Amino acid sequence: MRWEPVRALPAANAAVPSFGTVLARGARNRCPHCGEGRIFDGYLKVLSECSVCHTPFGELRADDAPPYFTIFLVGHLLVPFVFWIEKAYQPAMWLHMAVWLPLFTLLSMAALRPIKGATVGWMYRLGVNEELVAATVRETPRPVPRPDA
Image (cartoon, one colour):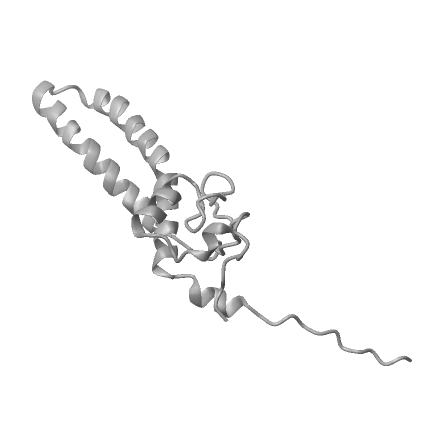
């Protein structure tokens, strides 16, 4: 049994949004499907489902992809400046460490959450959670009659 969005919502009748849309919604901490609910509960903890359309994205495990993408992007943004400053001015190593380490840290922390949201949206677009949702959907158990003793 496949998960179906709530039919009462106007956006629920639409198919899965485009690649760019789910990336942008995820980066803004919005549900990749409806764009209204939140993805995160805290800094990086993914909610189990959207509070608006009940899209189950809590089982989407981004694991090491967001930190990898963050390091890749921040490194490619700052390393050319590090090399340029070193070549042009040759500052002392302590000055490099005093400037670049906090800058790398702050930029990485600022970029990690939007990148993780975009990764969750990307995984949703790829349909990574369909098998997980199908495996967790169960019929409601029926009460077993108890013999009167």
